[in-house]
Amino acid sequence: MKITVIGGLNVDIGCVSLNAVRRADSNPARVRMSAGGVGRNIAENLLRLGADTAFISAAGDDGFASFLRERMAVIGLDSSRLIVRRGMSTGLYVLILEPAGELFTAVNDMEAVESITPADLEPFKKTVTASDLAVLDANLLPETLEAAVRIAGGVPLMADAVSAEKAKRLAGILPRLAILKTNRAEAEALAGFPVDTEKNLRECCRILLGAGLGEIHITLGKDGYCCASKDGVFIQPALPVKLMDVNGAGDAYTAGAARHFCAAGREHGTPPGAPHASDAAARGLFGAACAAITSEHPGAVYDELTAEKVRERITSQKNGESNERV
Image (cartoon, rainbow, N blue to C red; front, top):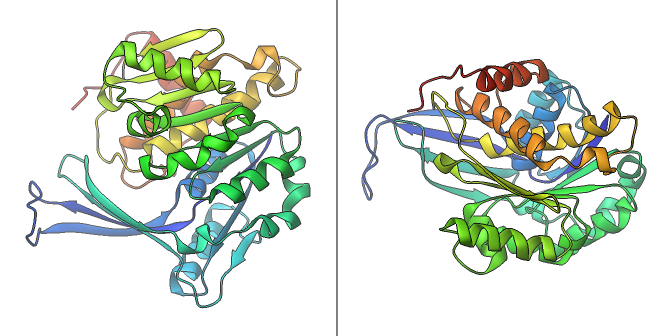
């Protein structure tokens, strides 16, 4: 399976506070620098899940860009499709986590990625159209997202909403998406009302599917996740986890759902997007298992993630074997 990802690339600076975070004060912490970015995380996860993955993004010409290229080389992710912005800062994401691994707050500077224009994507048209699926993230500006849709032609598209602030950038391309992945806050931003009850969650799915989506996946944190398509709305409890780090869990879910979308069609001898590939609930379970495994390890991507480990996690869950959730 061939999957192209177009989206965010940045360096993550993760700070895990040793005590409950105190506002307006200096908090002792463990600080770690790693490769990140929603699009890049999705691409690395897909690579580890066995997909032939191409990644398109932009970076500056600074030390952070060199660090990211070196990291990509180590994992075997081709960096030749990175657009270089001279004199511009490479993306940077700084997050502060509570001692238990929950996100306290984060800030990001995505100047380089947001500078990608429709013209910048033209040289990569053959890469996109040769794919079984193209995954976009909302770090791209609306006009660039629309250009990616045009370039993709008939290739199925998936999008990750990234954040509540950026989710609205996807509004213009919803009718073209085979799959949309959001969290609760991002779904609320697109629907225009709180998704705080099961009734509202179902209404949100109805509205967004009515906009032309093939299916939507909404992660709900400790409350589980929701998958919806023309076949119905499926609300599932969270998989038990020994939580270490929530950073990257949503990206792992997106990668898992994307991989399942392509694999399901291949296993039935049909192209992605055909009827046999439309099992949103199974796709959600595969994505949720990817997210659970990732959140039990430090960093945005678990470097030992494999499709086999995901299947084993799903089997153990179905057999009633579970980890303690904390």
